[in-house]
Length: 101
Image (cartoon, rainbow, N blue to C red):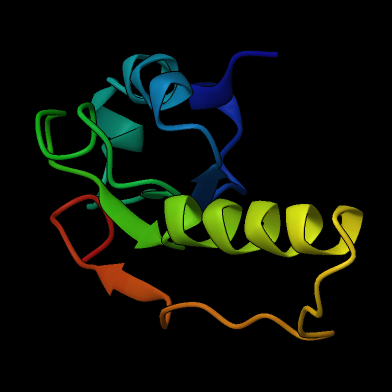
């Protein structure tokens, strides 16, 4: 079944931003236009997100900071250094763009 043919869909969460290009192409249909009928959001504010038509809303999870904190914690534990049991990172941000508003 083609994505644009499913009328019940009013929003898409497309985790890797490089797959959003395919989702956006599938929704290039006058009856299923992005933002007008179907909202599209991704989890990474990468190269594709602002350059899509319309530009994509992104959830910035600050994955680089999360992976750095997790790696540091793992290395500390493996080398016998004290490490926190809970690691926090930056607050998640929603970057609103035309694909969902």
